[in-house]
Image (cartoon, rainbow, N blue to C red; front, side, top):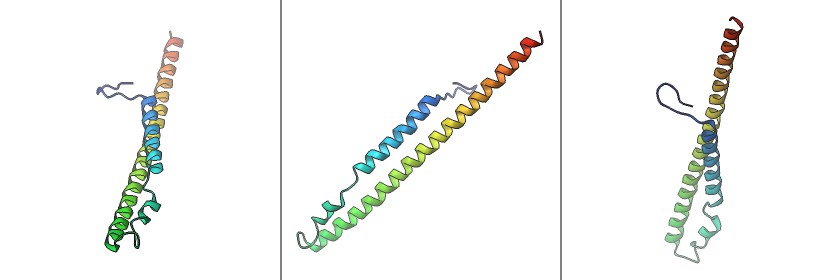
Length: 108
C-alpha cells in the first residue's frame, strides 16, 4: 500500500520482519556463551589473573547478549503492534470507501 508521500507498507512484510527478529533473538539465546567453558580457565587449571579476566569477559558478554536479545524482542513486538494497527486502519478505510460507494449507488 502506498500513501500520497510515496511511502509504502505491506502488512505481510511487517509481520515477516517481526518473526525474523524473534527468530534471530532465539538463535542468539541458543548460541549464548556456555558458562561451563569459563570454569576451565579458573584456578587451579589456569593462573588466577587469567581466571579473573575470563570471568569478567563472560559476565560482560552475558550482559551484552541479554541486552541484544531484549532489544530484538522489543523491536519484534513493536513491529507486530504496528502491523496490527496498520491492518486495522487499512480495513477501516476500505470499509469507509465501500460504504460511501454503496450509498452513492443507492442515491442514483
